[in-house]
Image (cartoon, rainbow, N blue to C red; front, top):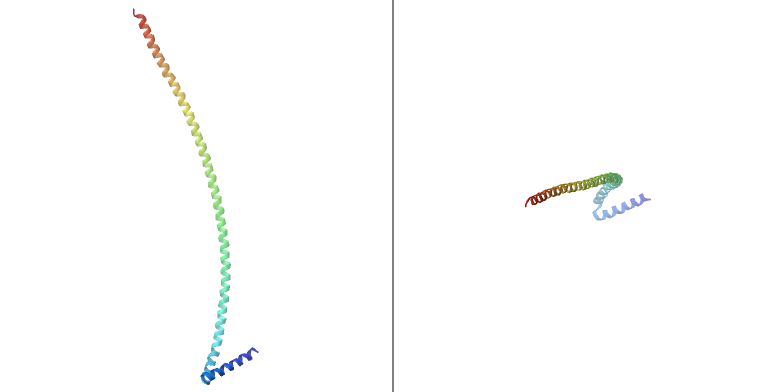
Length: 153
């Protein structure tokens, strides 16, 4: 049935072309059209094949993009985990250094107190020695004065 419709349509087109352009030109146009039709159909097939190929490539690229995205996400998570571990390690080291510094500061503070107490004891000792010698000197002077006063008439 479609072949009959196509043949009838072709005859009608030929008649219209014959009336408009004449029998020779109508025949030339029909031949041109007959030669052109397979090319147009072939081009349509080529376009459809290209369209299908594009869709296939698009699907492949989408799959590859998703795979790369998944790999990147995995790598980012791995780097994040490594960095978190390193940060925790640095925090532990900083805490250790802080504790060491606190102990060292406390040790220096205690040593300073001990040194201050030692200096205080030395100062008291030397003050006692100084005042004791001063007392002895004053006692000796007073004794000499008393002796001198007794010897005077």
